[in-house]
Image (tube, rainbow, N blue to C red):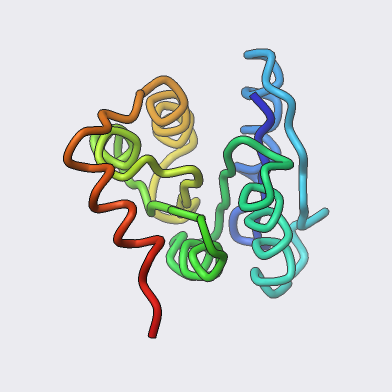
Length: 145
Protein backbone atom coordinates (compact mmCIF):
# COMPACT_ATOMS: atom_id res chain seq x y z
CA UNK A 1 0.00 0.00 0.00
CA UNK A 2 1.22 3.51 -0.79
CA UNK A 3 0.87 5.71 2.28
CA UNK A 4 1.25 9.49 2.51
CA UNK A 5 2.65 10.74 5.79
CA UNK A 6 3.08 14.27 7.08
CA UNK A 7 3.46 16.19 10.32
CA UNK A 8 4.30 19.48 11.87
CA UNK A 9 7.19 19.88 14.32
CA UNK A 10 5.13 18.44 17.19
CA UNK A 11 4.55 15.17 15.33
CA UNK A 12 7.93 14.93 13.65
CA UNK A 13 9.48 12.30 15.95
CA UNK A 14 6.61 9.83 15.62
CA UNK A 15 6.40 10.48 11.88
CA UNK A 16 10.00 9.45 11.45
CA UNK A 17 9.51 6.30 13.52
CA UNK A 18 6.28 5.38 11.72
CA UNK A 19 8.03 5.67 8.35
CA UNK A 20 10.40 2.90 9.43
CA UNK A 21 7.56 0.82 10.89
CA UNK A 22 5.53 1.10 7.66
CA UNK A 23 8.50 0.39 5.41
CA UNK A 24 9.32 -2.71 7.44
CA UNK A 25 5.79 -3.93 6.66
CA UNK A 26 6.45 -3.48 2.91
CA UNK A 27 4.37 -0.31 2.52
CA UNK A 28 5.61 2.42 0.22
CA UNK A 29 5.78 5.67 2.21
CA UNK A 30 5.66 9.15 0.70
CA UNK A 31 6.88 11.72 3.21
CA UNK A 32 5.39 15.19 2.69
CA UNK A 33 7.34 16.73 5.57
CA UNK A 34 8.11 18.48 7.78
CA UNK A 35 11.81 17.66 7.41
CA UNK A 36 12.75 18.57 10.99
CA UNK A 37 11.47 19.29 14.49
CA UNK A 38 11.87 23.02 13.86
CA UNK A 39 8.67 25.02 14.43
CA UNK A 40 6.45 25.16 11.33
CA UNK A 41 2.85 25.51 10.17
CA UNK A 42 1.05 22.17 9.78
CA UNK A 43 -1.12 23.13 6.75
CA UNK A 44 2.04 23.48 4.64
CA UNK A 45 2.63 19.73 4.97
CA UNK A 46 -0.83 18.28 5.61
CA UNK A 47 -2.47 19.77 2.51
CA UNK A 48 -0.06 18.11 0.04
CA UNK A 49 -0.41 14.75 1.81
CA UNK A 50 -4.22 14.97 1.75
CA UNK A 51 -4.14 16.02 -1.91
CA UNK A 52 -2.08 12.93 -2.72
CA UNK A 53 -4.69 10.68 -1.09
CA UNK A 54 -7.62 12.57 -2.65
CA UNK A 55 -6.10 12.26 -6.13
CA UNK A 56 -5.33 8.55 -5.74
CA UNK A 57 -1.57 9.06 -5.87
CA UNK A 58 -1.50 7.47 -2.40
CA UNK A 59 -3.90 4.84 -1.06
CA UNK A 60 -4.09 6.22 2.47
CA UNK A 61 -2.54 8.89 4.65
CA UNK A 62 -1.30 9.47 8.19
CA UNK A 63 -0.85 12.94 9.65
CA UNK A 64 0.60 13.84 13.02
CA UNK A 65 0.83 16.88 15.26
CA UNK A 66 0.74 17.80 18.91
CA UNK A 67 -2.93 16.96 19.41
CA UNK A 68 -3.76 15.87 15.88
CA UNK A 69 -6.79 18.17 15.78
CA UNK A 70 -5.51 20.81 13.37
CA UNK A 71 -4.02 18.16 11.12
CA UNK A 72 -7.36 16.33 10.84
CA UNK A 73 -9.14 19.62 10.13
CA UNK A 74 -6.67 20.51 7.37
CA UNK A 75 -6.89 17.08 5.75
CA UNK A 76 -10.69 17.09 5.86
CA UNK A 77 -10.80 20.28 3.79
CA UNK A 78 -10.02 18.10 0.76
CA UNK A 79 -12.92 16.57 -1.17
CA UNK A 80 -13.01 12.81 -0.70
CA UNK A 81 -10.87 12.77 2.42
CA UNK A 82 -12.21 11.16 5.56
CA UNK A 83 -9.53 11.80 8.16
CA UNK A 84 -10.29 10.50 11.64
CA UNK A 85 -8.56 11.69 14.79
CA UNK A 86 -7.57 8.47 16.56
CA UNK A 87 -6.42 8.12 20.15
CA UNK A 88 -6.73 4.37 20.72
CA UNK A 89 -7.19 1.11 18.82
CA UNK A 90 -10.98 1.27 19.05
CA UNK A 91 -11.21 4.69 17.39
CA UNK A 92 -8.88 3.45 14.63
CA UNK A 93 -10.95 0.32 14.03
CA UNK A 94 -14.24 2.25 13.98
CA UNK A 95 -12.76 4.86 11.66
CA UNK A 96 -12.23 2.08 9.11
CA UNK A 97 -15.27 -0.12 9.81
CA UNK A 98 -17.89 2.62 9.89
CA UNK A 99 -16.32 5.64 8.17
CA UNK A 100 -13.96 4.06 5.63
CA UNK A 101 -11.34 6.56 6.83
CA UNK A 102 -8.67 6.98 4.20
CA UNK A 103 -6.56 9.11 6.54
CA UNK A 104 -5.93 9.23 10.26
CA UNK A 105 -4.53 11.89 12.51
CA UNK A 106 -2.54 11.21 15.66
CA UNK A 107 -1.44 13.57 18.42
CA UNK A 108 2.15 12.81 19.46
CA UNK A 109 1.71 14.78 22.68
CA UNK A 110 -1.43 12.82 23.58
CA UNK A 111 -0.13 9.24 23.53
CA UNK A 112 3.06 7.24 23.51
CA UNK A 113 4.71 5.92 20.37
CA UNK A 114 3.85 2.28 21.06
CA UNK A 115 0.16 3.17 21.07
CA UNK A 116 0.59 5.21 17.88
CA UNK A 117 2.02 2.12 16.21
CA UNK A 118 -0.92 -0.01 17.41
CA UNK A 119 -3.37 2.61 16.11
CA UNK A 120 -1.73 2.62 12.69
CA UNK A 121 -1.60 -1.17 12.54
CA UNK A 122 -5.25 -1.51 13.56
CA UNK A 123 -6.34 1.08 11.01
CA UNK A 124 -4.36 -0.55 8.21
CA UNK A 125 -5.69 -4.03 8.97
CA UNK A 126 -9.37 -3.22 9.52
CA UNK A 127 -11.79 -3.52 6.61
CA UNK A 128 -14.70 -1.21 5.82
CA UNK A 129 -18.04 -2.87 6.68
CA UNK A 130 -20.01 -1.20 3.91
CA UNK A 131 -23.77 -1.68 4.13
CA UNK A 132 -25.60 1.09 5.98
CA UNK A 133 -22.32 2.99 6.34
CA UNK A 134 -22.03 3.47 2.56
CA UNK A 135 -25.18 5.61 2.56
CA UNK A 136 -23.76 7.83 5.30
CA UNK A 137 -20.41 8.27 3.58
CA UNK A 138 -22.21 9.20 0.35
CA UNK A 139 -23.99 11.94 2.29
CA UNK A 140 -20.64 13.29 3.45
CA UNK A 141 -19.40 13.43 -0.14
CA UNK A 142 -22.66 14.94 -1.48
CA UNK A 143 -22.80 17.79 1.04
CA UNK A 144 -22.71 21.30 -0.40
CA UNK A 145 -23.34 24.63 1.27
